[in-house]
Image (cartoon, rainbow, N blue to C red; front, side):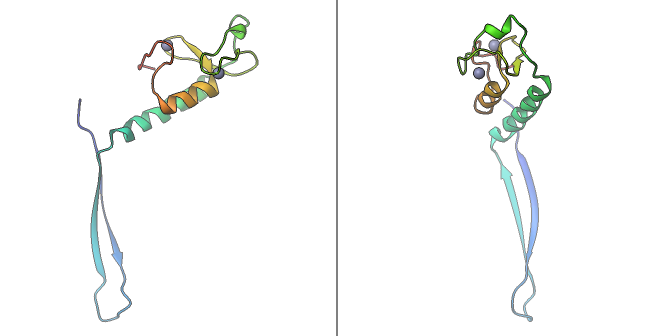
Length: 110
Ligand SMILES: [Zn+2]
Ligand SMILES: [Zn+2]
């Protein structure tokens, strides 16, 4: 696993009430070692892709059930993942925010 982290270095200036004292310059450095921050960005890209690739179900697919909400695909937008499993657009978008994995086959390369 590669070590990835965000680093941000900045500075803020604090003015004091006293006219005689010099402004205080505080340097701060924020280092984010949160790996989830990167997977969150990946997830956002994935959800955006689902938004553009959503489609209406075919007549065959209409009668199939979405395994997330257990309702049929009829009359609602759907998405097929790279593994060819199909879900309602809303269902899989919500699911992928929490788990970046296919609920049926557990594929992570979506
Ligand atoms: Zn559903
Ligand atoms: Zn799958």
